[in-house]
Length: 166
Image 1 (spheres, rainbow, N blue to C red):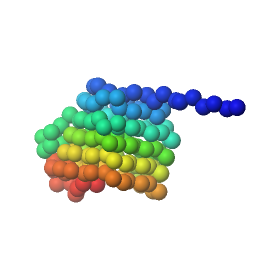
Image 2: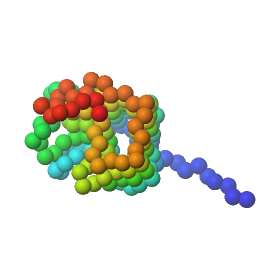
Image 3: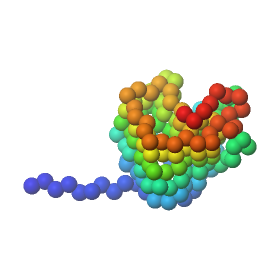
Image 4: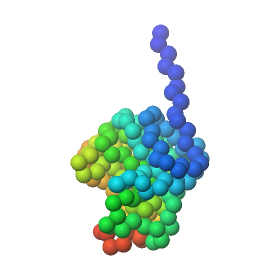
């Protein structure tokens, strides 16, 4: 007889001041406030997937970035920018709501990146609200599902970049 034990997910809440890279299934257990500084070229995410085959459950909580668009938003020429959640070079990862991602310098969610593709990404029941450029941006992404999401009041601080809800 084989009996499976329930695996405990990593619990996330409170303030995040350096990128939190997850290597196991994780879940929000409270609201998150991100103050990750822009120190590296490219995306400086609040939460980043560090491995394939992971799930991040938002559980109805909110991830809030450091800006209030249009103030503090990234310029198209900026080489460093903030995002809420990044899934770059990842396969079979899931971001499951309900939950809200808001107030980031570029995108609430970034999936893939030129030269760093992602596949089999699921984003479900997530609200991206009041992010500077778009609620979600996908680059080099294939075989993925984005369903029952809400993108509202994004792109108010795109500073001329071609942006919208997704």
